[in-house]
Image 1 (tube, rainbow, N blue to C red):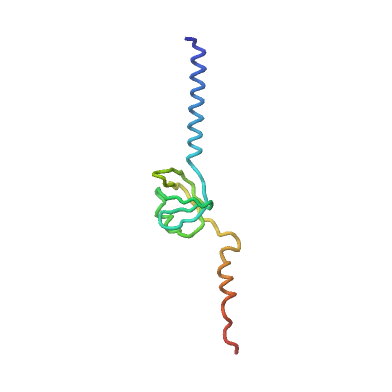
Image 2 (cartoon, rainbow, N blue to C red):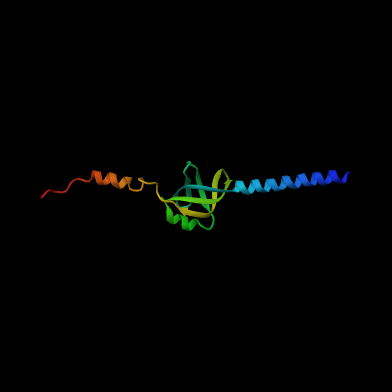
Length: 115
């Protein structure tokens, strides 16, 4: 066979292989924000629920109900979405939302006795 033709084929296959590895690496890691709902469960802001796996599970279970941003890889196993979290950070509640419930309770509080 023609050597230049073989080299061209090998080069194209090599480029294709590198592209596929890059796409898989990019698709595998994601960043999501949401809340830890219960031990081992993360609910993304878009409503998708994930089982949590990885070394940070115990740490994350200390933050139930808090808004967080997580970084990790997502997999599907037996119809269940699982995120292996490699990094996370606590997010502050949006302005006005953290104390909105408190403000309502203060408004409802009956006035004390007048002296």
